[in-house]
Length: 306
Image 1 (cartoon, rainbow, N blue to C red):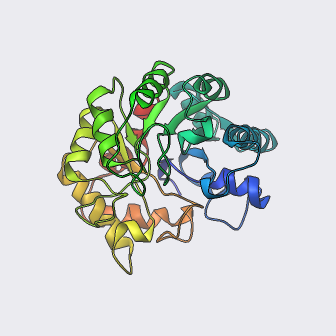
Image 2: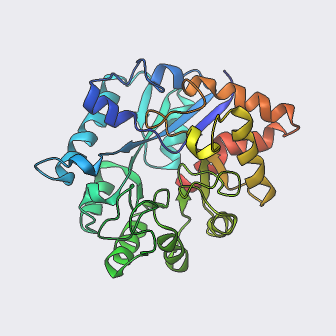
């Protein structure tokens, strides 16, 4: 397919780590062969680990293992993809017909919530980090636990260090209180890599209208999540994804909305990334021009990571 693609969240690397799934081609929701079919493609690959079964040697050791899987898979598939950390590297990979593969970290607990561990993250190419996953951590509360707890002083130090290293702060999963604390202090654009509109579906993982407007004011981008439970209370369809997109666009989101499929981390409305052609066609049928769609599908997230 000729459409462009830049997606801010998948859990495919953790699936490679735990299931032995090859990144080149697999039966999951995303692989390099499918990404290669897009006109040009960039994908953030998240390191992720469920805290409910924390490894005996600690979360940071697990982060190192997942980063090693990411590096090894890309080395084996250098004909299809290249690891990227800058806009120039993304553009160069795409110009060569390769998928731009970008590393992220879903949950600061993988870095022991330690600002000093961000130096390692930067060195190995991590370009974005979620403050939390579903568990509250040492930095702040999450959308599931300690929902009223915002950033503490240590959390603020973590944010400052990350932004000094050009690591983007991702607010998907964090508490509303932490979101607003971050907005007050951020010096860089922030993202919600895989979050939908709470006005369209009341799940607390989604963004309120005020949160989306504030994220836009930072210069950031929200990635539409295709997880059924975040799109509708029941029986979510492609029409629900369109509804969330158009709601954000009505709020002035033309330059602040992207894709955040949550591939290999949820039960989405598509069987896999190959289904995105249907979304492009549905939006075109509703009158959105290709320039706006190119921003949504590629340009907006590229701007943040450039």
